[in-house]
Image (tube, rainbow, N blue to C red; front, side):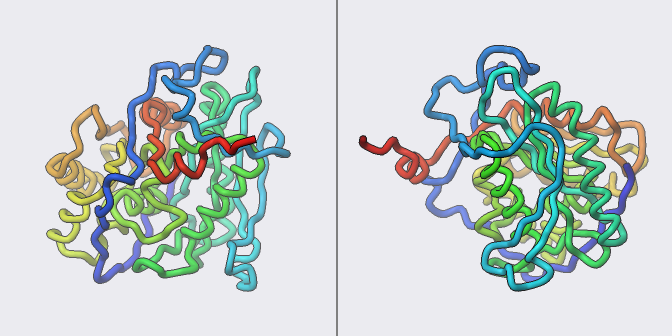
Length: 321
């Protein structure tokens, strides 16, 4: 699957806030069973209290599409009927499913964006079936088939509202393990994933909701640091908390490879460590996603889960009889 990067101009890029670290959700490495194929015993959690199931019900296994209205903006035609594609495997023993949010690249038109979202869902379905996780693939709303991103905190509605609504809708229909939400994007979708890694612009689509990130051909200059100074971009990286694990795949013939190589040096210099919470890999190819990449990206993502922070633990405590 091929695509193009898309672009935005974001002036006055906000610096990620890192106050109140004591209550921020943090990432942990899971037991090896978290990455096992369907049928292996265990969830990867050492303690049951680490789980955070959505307990959604009514949804069926298989592949499909659904439509959501963005809460608070359902009177706006552009946000009243937004589509996403999904896949949920059937497990031999019911259990909360990890989920990967898939963000496609710039498609050229709204109609092509729909097609790209469906293609990504199908591309990831084999790995999802083999390893037992759900996927949700929203459709971008831009006129060129790309993502409408917030320019600053509080900027709404944007496609970040749509991504959040699609994930919430899936979690209401299926039992999703919210401590194991992951984010992956290709090209312009990868730029959005890196934006989430650095910046806190949206309360419903932000770092603390995910356990790890992976991208194909996503770069910081595409969105996260677009329009900001090098110093401001470096500061955003330095202050990002929690520091989400990140894997980057890019073709050795991709026009964005030079940018990705520069990002790799910058990311390593600001706290990410090779193999522990960062991995940069080049493959033989160009600006595309190979059929082998979903499994390769999953084998990175599946290692990580979130600790519930104290506020979440209090809210989710068992109610007295």
